[in-house]
Structures are given as structure tokens and as C-alpha cells.
Image 1 (cartoon, helix red, strand yellow):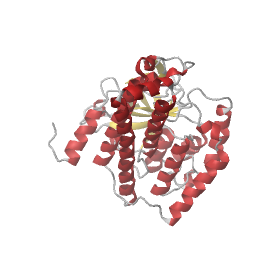
Image 2: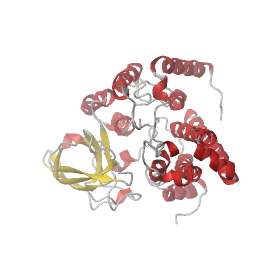
Image 3: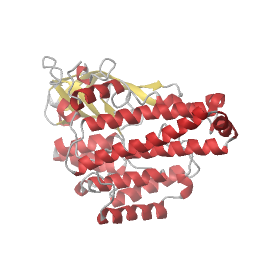
Image 4: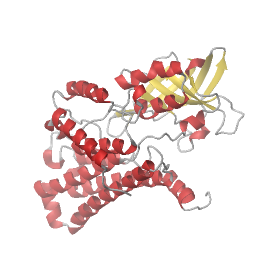
Length: 400
């Protein structure tokens, strides 16, 4: 694992820092953020929404809106290490990045499996931000065991007719398009007979219903399909081969460094709170356990960064992280929970406050972070699934 940048990478890091110095206002880097939503603006300052419009334009001009994408598709064409550097530097400044299902999943999968017509239709709109995408994968009975999905897509002339239900669909209420996997051959083994579609979310028969979480926040949705007609031209890749599209590992940097940096910043924020606030300093002064917790979380956030560096080093060598990605995901998710728990210990009874105008526990941030952290060991693959992958692929243990 090489920690030092090459001369070319040193030059690129300097370019990124100079860009941030020039274009990203310092007051937005210090803006109130929700710890559990690392890209969220929290209670956005005046002018931040307007700033984001011009910010995204500037990123796209450099290809940094989709840094991993090839230049011919409007991306940056950056190397694996350059993508890592960009993510790392933006994270330290708390600078927002473009992203989401369109940039990270729909677009890259389309580049590999899509027709020229599909690429021409959708890729420019992902880059420009004209299209927001959602992912229609999980179902009430098919989460960790996604291949058990039951949503059906039956060919009828030039269309497929889709019936079924999806759940935990982030951002479906805002999405223009969705990537959908549905069963097209019910007689095939469960990992076969699944197809992958590009779906216009305004198609008649699609109903989006909100799922309100315990933060009273509308992030997730359930999506119902009732006799939804999807043109056959919206099939991505081959019929009945959708599972392999959905599980394709594309050669784009996904080291998790942005989350690692966010955790290091949270640890710093907690230490600052312990030193400067009346509540925090009282807790630290009277509890050696809290001081030890703060030290542990700080060290663990740095260990997380080392795991990320290991993954990026493998990708640079052309290797595909397998068990290593599960190790990183497991460690990061559970560190999220530990950081939130430490914040609650530090704030004591004040950590139960939700009021953003109450400064005693950073405007209710502790309580919101704690509640949001409960989703981390579930979303993106549960901790149980990650442990199974590590045990089988890393330790060579038999399937349980």
C-alpha cells in the first residue's frame, strides 16, 4: 500500500485544492450538516441552494460531476487514484459532489450494456442533472435475498407489462427515471429469469407512496406497479440476464474515503464540543469513560481510512476488492453507530433534544444522528450479509 502521491498525483491534488480555494465559499464548508446525511446541507444557509446550481455547472465543465465516467460520455476520465484524491479533498472541505443512482449505477451500467440509442438518450441528462434516478430493486420479501424478487414483467407485443411492489426506494418521489429489475421467466432458477429495465417514473400505473421514518423524514418510498406498460426498447441488455447486470462490479473508484473523512470530522466535532460546550466539558471532566470513548472513536475513524487506502491500492493494481469491500462496509456501518452512541453519552440527557434552535446538544444533532445511524447496518447490504461474505470468501468457511 503506497500512501505517497506520485508527482502527477501531487499536481492533481494541488489543482483540486486550488479549485476549492477559489470556488467553494468557506462559509459553506462550515455550514450546519446532518452527520447521518454526509452530503446534506442540513438547515441550509441563505444562498446555498442558488450556489449549488452554479457549483454543479462548474464541476461538469471539468468532468468532475462524474469523474469516473469516460470523457466521451461527459465524465472526467480520471484514474482510480485521481478519483480517490478528488473524493478525499472534497470530503475534507465538506464540499458537495454530484452523485446518486444515475451517476453511480444507472449511467455506468448503461455504458457497458446499453444500446447507442439508450446512451444518447439518457447519459447527457444524468450529467446535466435533468434526470434524477431511483433504484427499484428491493421488495417486501426480497431484501438481503434480492434474487427472490416477485415483481413480474410479461412481454406483450412491443411492451412489457409490469406488476408488483418495490420498497425502500430512496428518492422515488423526486425521480424522473428508475432502474428496475423484474422477473421475466418465473420457471428459471431464481438468479436467472430476471431482466433489467429503464423506467420512466411518470408511466401510468406507477404509484409512489411515502415511508416516513422516525426522524419524520421522507427519504424512502414504496412503489407499486399495476399493469405498467414499459416499451421493449427500455430493456437494458439481454432478457433474463438482468441479475448479472445488477451485480456487475464496474471499474470505478468506490473506496468509501468520503464516508471515512466524514467520520473523522464527526470525531473532531465531538472533541470540540467536549472542550468548549458547558454540557460536553462537564461530561468529560466527570467521566473517564467518555474521554476513552472519544479517543477510541478518533482512532477507529483513522483505521477506517486505512481500510479505504487498502481498497484503492488494490484497484490501482487492477484487482477487484471482494471481501475487502465487505470489510469496509461492515466497519463503516458499525462505526456510524458507535459514533452516534458516543455522541449520546457525551450529551447526556441533553442528547435527547430534537429542537434545532436549542444549542445545548448542537441543535438536536445528537438525537437525529443516533436515530439515523440505526439504518447504517441495514442499507446497502446488512451487517449479517457482510459477515457471511467475509466468512465464506475471506476465511473459506462453508455456507451456513
